[in-house]
Length: 348
Image (cartoon, rainbow, N blue to C red; front, side, top):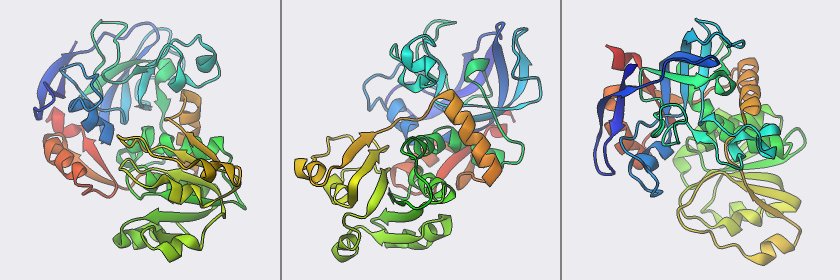
């Protein structure tokens, strides 16, 4: 079936209207009308072929919130009219040890990403949420709590789970001192979750203009990282630090803030390698780790947690026709803190 979408036709082109083909729902498929789709920085990277793996036309979007419009005869978890969501994955092998453990994002055969993945049903590649509807196997569809603002929920499907998963994995909670590096699309969610988990939260930013926002979002303290004296006051005192910065930066300055057996987890993705001083890991014993999104069960856990605690992203809602301007602003970091597309604008 044909649906309306916006796509990049090559690395240099604007994102423009394009009709694409979706499969008819199979036995275990859920079709959903897309209500909102978040704009992730990886949408730009993929559309611009920054990672040298893009297949065109590219329909981005992996922060999808919608309402179920059709279900296959064997679907048991959803019915027509249910609020639903799709994140960064639409399938995986489901049989490897990582998939069986609920870590589909680390599928040993590689997960099928929501866009620019291998389409196992129609052939070719998958198309994302910059479109009016999508069809996904129910095993990769999520339930959305009715209590949440639906537009502001969309970024939880990537920015939310990317920060929630490591905070949960490293058991962040009461009595711990936790640092969040960077107050962008990822970092602002890290602050919200770390505070909700009961930790003492310290935000690190290079922008004094973000101090007020950091405190509003839940940080107990905000440190301007270019202030050497302010940084020195926190040496060796953190249980956990979540680094959400994708630009080049001095990772050693943050490793030095960890106490014995403390962990710094990187969720940002700098283009160039970050030099690490061996002695920042050896003395005292410290951990430097990475993390990527979360599995389906954990993503559902996050959505339920957000429903219970009223946690959503801070967003700016835009029409589909404004996506190119939004991307230009995103490149200049001119958004607080995520753009979300109102897909009704594509249907009108």
